Amino acid sequence: MANIRRRTALRLVTGASLAALGGLAITAQPAQALQHLWGTCTRCRTLWFTGNGTRGGCPAGDVLDGGHHYLGIDWMVKTVEDGGAGQPGWRWCGLCQALWFEGNGGDPGACPSAYGGNPGHLPFTRPVAGTPGTSSAHYVLEDITNRDRPGGFSGWRFCVKCKGLWDAVNNSLYTNNVCPSDHQPHSLWGSGNYVLRRFGSTR
Image 1 (tube, rainbow, N blue to C red):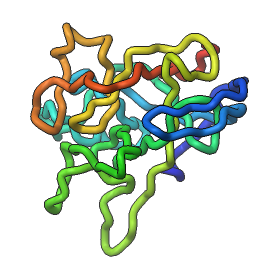
Image 2 (tube, one colour; image 1 turned 120 degrees about the vertical axis):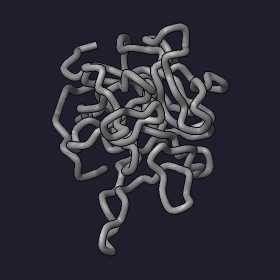
Image 3 (cartoon, one colour; image 1 turned 45 degrees about the horizontal axis):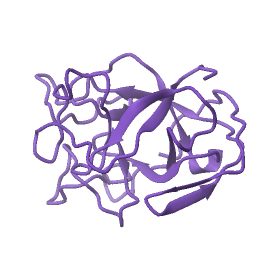
Image 4 (cartoon, rainbow, N blue to C red; image 1 turned 120 degrees about the horizontal axis):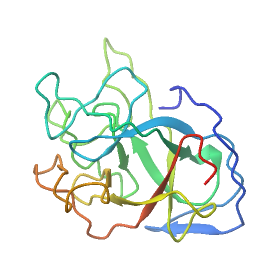
């Protein structure tokens, strides 16, 4: 999603640590600009991009258009170009608008908006009239052991079933969430404890 709106939110000062989660590593360096307009879906609990004028696709469904429901918190996500500590390999899905992890050998996971016999996420919008569509940026997520600085909100988890990022804290006993792979709760298995920061926050 390289050409989606990006606004300078704050500058991060980091050390020279290395992120080495899931066999992937990047060198920590000062981050320059973070992309905001990421939101939590109140129904499926996944993180999705709210700035495209679409509510994407929610596995919990919706009586109107099947889209996500915005919780009201504006989260920021770094790109590889921003630098800093964290795990690379995260992409935006041009179909459901969610953030998902492509770093496991390119496994596309499960997308609630999949089409054409492909059940997984796509790092670009659906091609229309032969055009390739908008491509995703390459994102980086901090976690509690590898982050630019203290603070932020932890409890974000990777779901091994759908490959998406979901909020494992702000839901009712881990049940107020829906995974598109089987319409059951997301999985905590094998996940790091990721950290997101609110837009405009200094921590």
